[in-house]
Image (tube, rainbow, N blue to C red):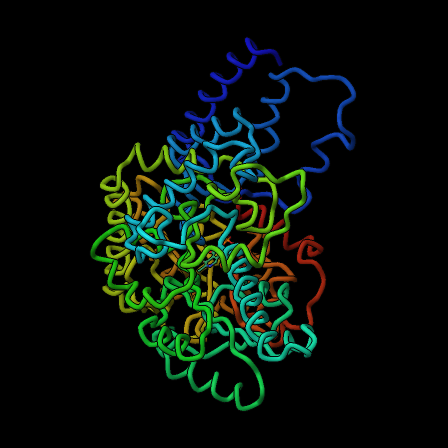
Length: 549
Ligand code: PLP
């Protein structure tokens, strides 16, 4: 493709994107296909000769789109929002065109400098303590863009681990580092995201998962008791990962209580606010951050709830030298003359190479202004309240979380199976998409407002689908048993559950990853291990059901 062809095809692509996004509402939210659908549609080897652009584009609508889950669809209410907006898409296009790899200041100065500035802008808007901002007087802190919240938690844990080992090494210079490592203990709540468990695995440290209170909030007294028990057993607490806005139900750990416990034991307190942190740009949500002054680090994902495309996970630290001490490796070929005056972001994370991700965030912040972004967040919160009211008004249902932001957790009163069945029915219809989770050990449906321009009509439509399908389920008790046996296949069919998910829900930890639905199967279903798609008669039945919708 030469530059003139790119000019033309690029414009055509923008047209295609506009049509796709404008016509999204006409499509099913989730694809009606089965695993392996694509393999027979594509050749088994890459083409030897170049193919025409029109042939490639024809395959998009014919072969790719049928297998796409439309995250920007107005009826998509699963997970958390996947940030997306026109300014952000354009920012990423430009970043791709510049194509720089900004691992050091010298490798592309604007790439580094814009990131530092934009992170200070966003940090100020969120209301982070000034020690986290790179340009505040006497600050040792600063912000960085990582690829994901999981990466943020990992690098903070790595840094805390390095600090803890350094301190222990001073106290016990002749003890092997491996022995010291075996004493380190990290903490989080049962409601924390599974990435904390993964980080502890990578860091090779023990993780103690604590019970939150009835509001799914980790409390200081629980943490203090656990740490005291561990210290008495010779363990060394070094890191606590707290959450503001948990994945399951958007609950908030009590930082004002946890912070002083961490300070007393010189423990690193990280705050993971992947979704909810974006809302702190609104004054009315800032009180939910109370206690943030105790934090050593904080992350939020503009690629979730700030109209910025994946990947853009922003992270701030109070002391950047603690971060870089854990991550610096400095071969000669990456050194340059300005290291003392500039930031080299390769020392702030795991990868060496980094894209110019600050561009899209800069475009978003400038195109919407903080004002426009606040309006977007407030609209989602208002619509979630509307959905909550609809649930509360219906005596068949109950709300299972304290709705503070854009997430409502709800369930049919009674046994979990009813809600499972309801969700299966909704998802298979392709009219809405939601995922389940567990709140206080009860199976719930998560309804999240996700679309940029979500309206009251979208909420009312979603409720009408939920309400009608609930009526069908509740009015037909005689048929329940048969439907129960269909249930796990139905869920599987809409790619909600698979064996690994099923195993996960039975795994030793109950940390949720926010993308693997938690499924509770009947006990007598437990022995069924075959792939659900081997049930041919069932597939036919499901296909019929889909066709009839
Ligand atoms: N932390 C929380 C609170 C989350 O809700 C999520 C995902 O939803 C994550 C971490 C993981 O985010 P990422 O996919 O950016 O690693």
